Length: 287
Image 1: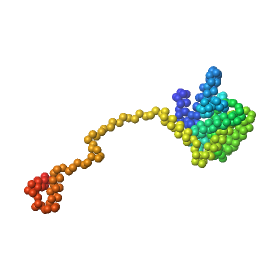
Image 2: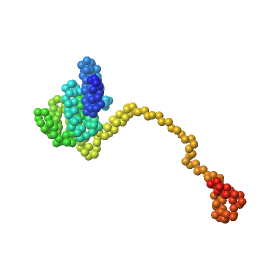
Image 3: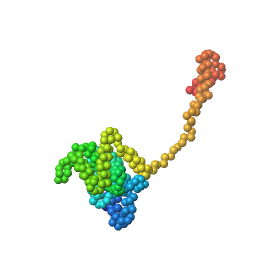
């Protein structure tokens, strides 16, 4: 098995986390190559897939509210996000399904993007957003909200509770908002807020990821090739009588017998004519 076949097998069998990592890494590698060898084309592509806080842009490019979450600024940005995505997904999938995970990833991306746009509208500034951090924060905070006292063993630190990790990340984002990468940290906080709300609503019986799963299932079914059904030959019974067709009458001989028997019951055997007596005798011999 060569490398390509091995990667295909990992993609098919690795679950939703593996597939998301493949998508992020694949898109990242293509963009990094474009940035190195065709910078002008790279800038054009980025303008169409990154999320801009400028109203005139995001209104005409609504797909950027989702697409930006599969684009990363550089190799280290991509590497760090994929490590955290792998870590967060393992926690989340301990308690929830892969469809809920994927739905939360997509919805967390959209919500984080909306927070970014609204924040920059208030700040009267323009910027662009890339990276899966907002979606990843939604997943991590959702897991921490659902099972805050789960213990995680960290290298060189030891066992810590999940809510401790979530709190440290939130505090770091809050501290860095006024310092650098304001839009990115605001998106992180937006994703974290959505992850918290998602679990609270889920605990009250509302699963926000269900509509997303239904839409995805619809499109998967729509574009999935249909299996050819074998031809079935239908034989029509042309002699079959309609249901409403009256039942056939009794045959003439039986009808005569019935009439003769009725006459006997009413008037006796002597009331029969010679022909009737002979007919009755003849039928009796044939029985």
